[in-house]
Amino acid sequence: MEIKLTLGRVNEIGMGFLSVWDKVKDTVTLSPKATYALIDLKRKIEPHFQSLQETIYTMAMNNGGEQQSNGTVRVPPENVETMNEKLHEIYEEEISVEYLPIKVRDNDVFPAHLMEILFDFLEME
Image (cartoon, rainbow, N blue to C red; front, side, top):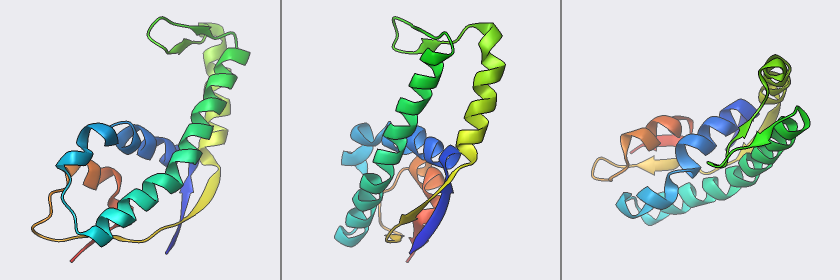
């Protein structure tokens, strides 16, 4: 199957799924086919998310951003509006992603927050 995603949606998936995957992957119990589909989706979304994060970082630094001790970048208040306008434009861009539906059964264990963020890719069996 193919789905079109805005980069804003890719960012949501990245923040809600990719950022927590290593912490929750051992609690997920799916069939081997569904696990394969989930990992396949992760591998397809991850490069887009990483590229987006690099773009955001570069934009922030080019708009007077300063690296903070916690790893974030602080953009000066006078540049925030311009930065937000540019981010809005980027977040509206679309990509196409080929994916296999993640088929979830009644007896599978799949955390609700992951189901919510990956809802468009799920099918109930």
